[in-house]
Structures are given as C-alpha cells and as structure tokens.
Length: 71
Image (cartoon, rainbow, N blue to C red; front, side, top):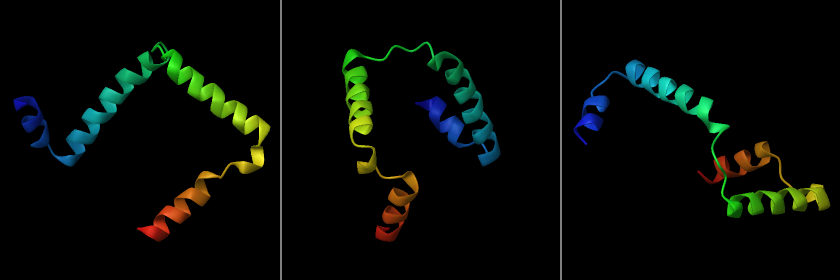
C-alpha cells in the first residue's frame, strides 16, 4: 500500500498521465481478454431483448437527464 500513498502524493496532472498510461496498456490487451460464458449469455440475452423490443430501450441521454434531476 505504500505505493498507493506515493501515487496520491503526485499532482493531478501527474496522476492523470499515470492513469492514461495504465489505460493505454490495458486497452491493447483488452481485446484479447476472455469473457466468461456467463457474461456472454447475459450479453446475448440483452441483445436478443433489444432486437425483439427495440422501442423498450432508453437512450443514454434520457437516463442521464433523469439521474441528474434526482441528484
């Protein structure tokens, strides 16, 4: 945990650069990551639900607007 404490001492700009560097290293490998059969099934169910009932879905902008009203 000492490493975390040292990272938190960095400036915001330095931490953002670190996060971007980490993200770039992950994104290159993310396409190779395996998705569990359970997650694949969930994604397939959601896609099938969308195909069968496209009007039942809500655009992100609508969800965002509703959430911001509550906050």
